[in-house]
Image 1 (cartoon, each protein chain N blue to C red):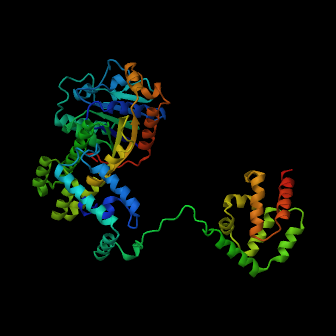
Image 2: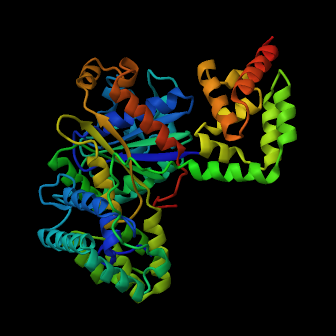
Image 3: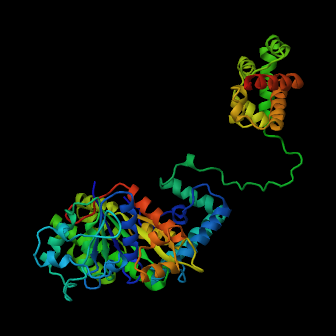
Amino acid sequence: MKKIYSIGGGKGGSGKSFIAASLGALFAREGSRVVLVDLDLGASNLHTFLNLKNPPRGLDEFIDKKIAHLEDVALATSVQNLYLISSARCSLEVANLFYAQKKKLISAIENLPFDYVLLDLGPGTHFNTLDFFLTASEGVFVATPEPTAIENTFRFIKSIYLRKLKQSLKEADIWYLCRDEIVAMSRNGLTSPIDFINILVKKDIEQGKIFEDLLNGLKLRLVMNKVRGQIRENLGRQIVEVCNRHLYPGFDLLETINYDSRVYDAILSKQIFIGKYPYTKTAVALQKAARKLKQEQPIAIGLES
Amino acid sequence: MVKRFKDLNYYQLLQVSLNTSPFEIRQAYKNMLNIYEESSLATYSFFSSDERTEILAKVEEAFLTLIDSKKRIAYDEKLVNIGEVSRSMLKDHEHKKATPIYQINKEKTGSNYLQKIRRKIQEKGVKELSNLIIKDDVISGEDLKNLREALGVEVEEIFQATKISPTVLQAIEGNDVANLPPSIYLKSFLKSYAEVLQLDTKRIIQGYLTNIEEDHG
């Protein structure tokens, strides 16, 4: 059964592409057919992690309607069974994808004929990024233990919830029921979707239940990356706990990954870290993360599900 | 329905169970402060300062209530009255007295079981069977097992009385040479076993060792 994972998180440089490339390589190693999709539109560099200097083909052909099937531009990488759909060749204005183009791209991603599809997202909370994130059956947030990164991660998480709520309300055609509340919430920074559900339950018990189940179904995993020094190991656990208590209880700590300067070496030499340094603490943590991610039953959170 | 944070009771708030000890409550309180204090890396950007003040006040209130045994009893009573917990779930909050480390007159935990086994031996009177076993030069695990079962004694009871682990006891009774402990331990285990069943320890050890030697070739 095909699984789509999205790898996101508000902050740039937190290691989203690194985690995506590593997880992809680990899945592929075990014989699954894996495709990485670089959706950091406008600032893509996943190809560099995989040592594809100038990707000969890419997402641009699909966006420009030169090809009909997205899988046609999947490039083989140095790792067997691991493919990449690059956005390096897209126009400099690709970050501002039109709505229709985005819709088409999302449905193409959902139909990619691979065992695992990993979506590497860009930073920020642009609607496109959020929608790509919600395409997946499971979402992975990458954060680093700095106040800045954690701040952006919370913002990203809250944006994901708000986006999901809005989209689903529109789909269910009950937007009118709680328009004012939604507007107020996005202005004040969504403190808790539980508040919103409570409002909805008051107005319409049945719909409230449906939306509660929907948010319960959101499966979100946190990766604490580049952990070192004084930072306690349990920071990730604390964040997950707070999210579960004050947002919705679908959070789980996927893994805490140690900072390792050899990651930098690997990127400089354009080799995949887990291939070059397979016995480091960091590589072992990545393996654990991959195993844990695979074992879970998929729960659809996708927009078109 | 998922409970809102502000609807949590004090136990849920501190993430402790209903009958938890004051020591654990203190630990839980510290953990909560770690998470919710303004300096906490995990939440500094998560809450507005109003929200944080509110949460911290509630954590404080929960802690001060549960750590005070009188207030805690009153609070538990309240929880029972509003139907949040049933009375049967509450244990006595009577503080456990500290157990001295060097308690000389400490009763051995096994002694109850020992007495129980002794009583069974008196009641059943299996003198004939035990004499029969002792008379033989070779004493196998089955012999011991038969005797134990004739007395109606469980492996668990032997374990409680002697503290020999059930797996070892099973290995002894099953003549399972591969899983037997080294002979010096085995001898002492056999001695304890024999003592519990009031058998001649020397003959049991000798007989059993002959038995496994024969078995082993």
